[in-house]
Amino acid sequence: MTRAAHQASPGHDGSFVPSVQGLRGIAALSVLMDHFYDMPKGGMYDIPDPGFLPPLWLWLQSVINVGGHGVELFFMISGFLIPASLVRHGSLPRFFFDRILRIMPVFVVLHLALFAVGPVVGYKFFRGIDLTSYLGIFAANLFFVQDALGLPIAQQNAWTLTYEWAFYIWFALTFSMLRIGGRVLAAPLILLGVACLMHWPITAFFCIGMLFSATGWRISIPGPLGLIAGLACGVAMYASLVLFHPFVGLVPGVLLFGMVLAPDSGLARALSMPALQYVGKISYSLYLVHPFVLFPLQVIGLKLVAVGVDRWLLWAAFILIGSLMSLVASAISYELIEVRLRRLLDGAVRTTLFRPLSKMEQSV
Image 1 (tube, one colour):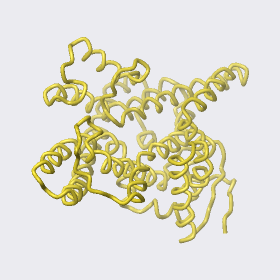
Image 2 (cartoon, helix red, strand yellow):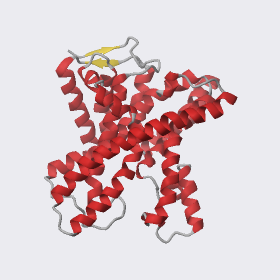
Image 3 (cartoon, one colour):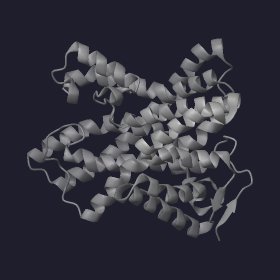
Image 4 (tube, rainbow, N blue to C red):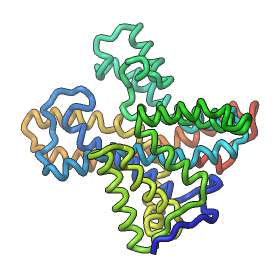
């Protein structure tokens, strides 16, 4: 039986929620699945067709092609975690410093690698580029303003970080204005948020997380029935995003996230499995790193299909080898960059400005 709980639940105060970690893993794997469909066609990196994607049934194409909407799951998670993180830090400088430590190290390492290697391999917009354009694209992508300036995006998945940073800034300012002057001072920012929702509808998924962060409402459906209900809501959300409008997907999205957060629901228990917990832990690296891993495999596949190698064989190898290499590379990125480099940067900077980073803050 479905029941809505209004009592305090894990995660309501910003504490660790295993099912949210598992949902992160699903979101990253979802985007990876989408690229297993897009990249063999040769379109993702401006490599001319024909690709090595075999002829697929239309229903299978549709199923795989919705994977890119895993970003909406990431937005829901951010909307849920960021309010508690801001309250816990107690100041805007501490909050933004930790957001920089969380987001930027992996991004910057990949950014530097791309702009160092890209011109050598003739990747995309680097072909025939002059120094002024190179520096302009470098700076615009580093500060996530490439879309606003009409410049090419460097890291294909990093476009979502523009939305993430915009949400961090908007929420932090709105929260501060509400505390200082109430609704009067916050009203312009709230109206700006509404305008952004109307112009970029996928940003509405941040609101789902904010809703559950502000309340103790959870939806608990135990056992196999809960897992089936959660999967049905996930399918309905993805289908709504493709077939209808993002606002339509908000309804199943709310139901899905409510079940994710209920610790005794069948969906939450499934998302708490050890394998998904680990993928969720490395999900940020997996999300950004896997296109770099898949790119050379894509180039090899395009060369092999040109000499007559079977497309089904190439696609199967691309998925299997690409999955393994992406997970290994992401695990290495997590350990070396997200943990060790982040700890080094934290020790070098925070000790002179703020208190040491707590274990709870590192998990956000």
